[in-house]
Length: 174
Image (cartoon, rainbow, N blue to C red; front, side, top):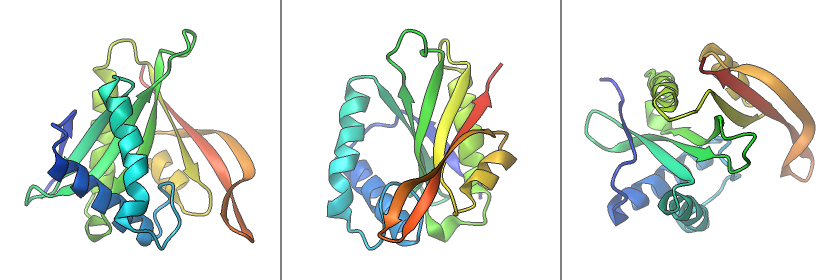
């Protein structure tokens, strides 16, 4: 069954709790979404509340993916630039698909929905995202049409002896 994506869903307490659970599950499965396992929902909640505050202010938008049962299965957050010379592109953050849905094409569907949503946003001509080296995410994003445009070696510290590259990817929309 295909992933059903919705931009700017109503942010009910139940939805926020589901996104928080998704974020914890993805993190604990080794997903590179800002945390290192083990992590609990309470560890993530404050970061989610920052996203929610930015959404309330119109600086961020949520793209939500639901599975065939209507459960939250994927997310991506658009964040907009405030600098006048960079308002023509947006960031894509916290791109996640629940581990139980890996291999079903949900990631590709989410990225296609993100591209479609960005194309419909006034003045947006590109999407920029970053990913953690050593995870294969950069290869996934390349298959979705993104191009690596920058890399900072060892910029992400996952553990005392584990440093990863911070990879910047770009998708032009014109």
